[in-house]
Length: 147
Image (cartoon, rainbow, N blue to C red; front, side):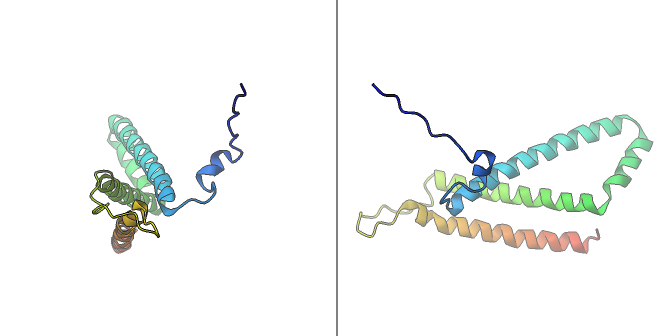
């Protein structure tokens, strides 16, 4: 009996970015994972920095706060807000779809077939539109708030 050899992954980590004929949902999945890891990293850094610098005294805490009021850190704050918005709203879209609310009523299989992925695409476009609108609103807030 012959054994089937598994296909080798020649793309490696680049396969995350481009691995053939990906659709929009695959890229949203990748971005959902990246934003989740980014939010987790931010929370860990925030907890460590807050506890370590707060315990060391008032002078160290105030010096740290002066450094963190740099405009580059404001850009980082904006990116954390964008990542949180995307991750939360995309997670809501996934919950709605997984529970079956986005599928609608079953249809008879009449050619040309319409799969359920195309019926869920409206939710995807709606959520992405809301994320973009909120990102623009928060960008205006960050600019108006003074870098």
